[in-house]
Image (cartoon, rainbow, N blue to C red; front, side, top):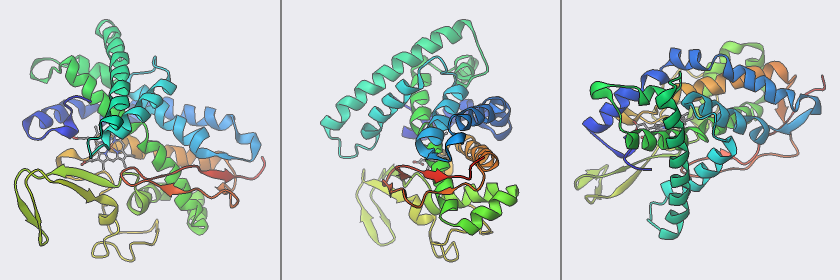
Length: 323
Ligand code: HEM
């Protein structure tokens, strides 16, 4: 992807974070997307509401996630199918911890195609600034000025973190509530529970499994000696079910009062898009519950949840009562 904030530490990473954070703050996200996210959700639902059932993963969560992030970043002129294809091509390269050249080559190709498309958008934004994240990055000045290479690399990172994870979160919250029908009924009748339902889903079945780091020197952790340069996978999904932290951690419970989970990571690299992802999942769930009466999982087509670094359902078949 090129040098980006997740792959760097220290003043370089802190500088990029300081520059790119403002458009991702809660109020900014809500204001930027208030016309777009609910409108898209209604449009997508209009397309299948008469059918009484569908695969929400494919027909709702996927386009919601891709098209909302595309809008937020300012990439609307790039077909969303291309963004998805490049991103899917790029992912095996990101998880290529064994440095297998056969995995890396197609990922590099996808990354190059994505980079060229971003450059073309930047050329236009030079002349016509707008309210997008890309335009924000391009038009900073003084010590906040970002080079083209920095913008492209960090935009690729945002796409790789942001196209897929909110999709998985939307699908996971529908699945988690659908598998606990009494809690789904509670959320349906008391929408103040949407926020805790999304947070509990992130804790109980967060879509990102690990936070990867590399030791800078030999170190001993909990009695295990690690060499300098060792790759470490800090298992977020395990921390989120730590029995020392959460009472009966394997239980899904929208009424938990035990505080924060680590589904968005911790520290300097805490997810840049956390608020955007949460907001998208909350608005989506609210509108789905409004529009699809008695929304429930389709008992004949249960999803398979799989993946390790990225964990998600392969489908979310649901039914609702005829209108
Ligand atoms: C709702 C779903 C999401 C989840 C569960 C999630 C999860 C995470 C996690 C666990 C990290 C920390 C990685 C580490 O420490 O190694 C992270 C970082 C990051 N995420 Fe997300 N993410 C989500 C959505 C997004 C979105 C929508 C964006 C789009 C901008 C995004 C962009 C980023 C970036 C740029 C970083 C790196 C930040 C840095 O290095 O300073 N994420 N995310």
